[in-house]
Length: 206
Image (cartoon, rainbow, N blue to C red):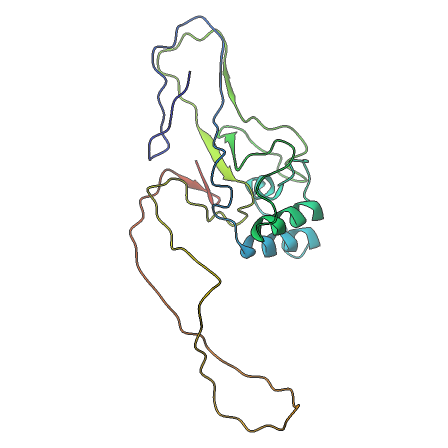
């Protein structure tokens, strides 16, 4: 049986026979680069160096690109290769999105990935008509939680091409002299209306 979520993340599985065992497994494997940028690379590096440790277990899951259960320089290298388009997939069976049972409580200290966490929900001897299951979606590689959760939410396309006009004050200097130029690049703003697909918890969609 399969069910596709709606724009709000809701889903419905109909005509499920009673008296059997079922396992509900959420899955989303596309759009690997959704939400991934150099900001995530910097944030992951700061965690590894101990400068700014992660504050959420979902950041650990997002940062564990090689699905090893730990955060290391291997994850940093993998993330860098993805950003540079040198890699196009994740190792060890990892997927672009991971889903954690919203009722699960991670350990309050240490590495939250040391113990297995539920990425599915079991219903044994199913006999209830109205059963609910909630999951928290984590975009792998997206440390700061900037991924767009569904296709109805649009984002601005960014490229590295084009020119930036920089204005600086006139200065006098000699040939070969090293100087420091203070400048402020032009700031572009735009507004947009966003309908959130569901509940945002610690920067991750549920």
